[in-house]
Image (cartoon, rainbow, N blue to C red; front, side, top):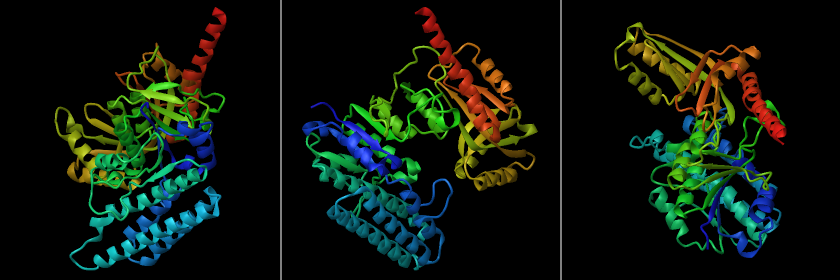
Length: 481
């Protein structure tokens, strides 16, 4: 038997259960063709928002209400609403009444188990020897596991109803004693599985000694996926998303204008992640890259498309721009100190303050007396950074403003006069750049613009650097023919 493939189904794709089951998991496969695969499942779209907090708006979910409220009613009501949403989802994705009953009992046991645990924890922390903040990360981890277990259990029921020997692999540590390392928990779960005749449906969250949520935030399911791929010696790792990996966002430049990416390398994937457009979490990519496992990004809703292959050794056949992407909501945080010239320590102090307040650095520039960090994070965190640095360096002048960072990506950007073409395209579009970074490694070129110019900048650069290049190549081929 050849080595297996390991697949990850994202939250939006998980909700499209008919497509996932009929087109990806079963399709035309029969008998043994159904197996020798592993599927890692995220929580349904929106479910983790209810359990924690809304990823984009910050609206409080169960965790945020529990952590910030003295009243049991607020978080308890939110937990009840989450349970109701899970029951409703059971009816959306399951057809058989017996399966729905099993799924409802599963949800009830998890939701009421969490409720009892959180009430007991609050009672325990009413005594002076126990402090709630010390236990909040464990609460967050437990709540994440509920969402992942719900979707994986339902998918197992759906597949078993279709006569597939699917096995629910619960790595959430529910009602288990003790802690194990991430790799140990995965290895112990898989040692008893026969991949030649079982189809494992695995929770994207793993309860482990390292604490996945604390380390990786909401990217934890991709870490699980990556470590499983390494553990089973996967021949390929596949992520099923709701979109193609393309030369730009089709919503911005038009579906007809974008160019699907057929192949790239982990270097470009890292740059995408830095810009908030994650093909895969960087730490997950690291494990696959080190194990020489290729990653394929596929569109859930176009399963016949081969998708994009990402490998560490995929060098470009010729210099070219591959992707134009951008990030809004960036703070240009400028630290000016006239006496900085020739004095060491300023940079380290700024970085330490940024790390303490958990401000993500997207890009950075500096000269003799000015250091500018382009930061992604909450406005209040940036404000705290400014206050701390003002106290430490009272003679410094610190300013911040909202900007957008536009990134031009490719495995090899040594395209003749690329910088000049970028600036010309912006001038033709009437966009005045605030900054321009042409990096020596030639995989990433950055333009800083006003936040309001984000969309127009991407359209202008995509038209100049990708659409026109594709048109010129097509003309050359036509002329040669």
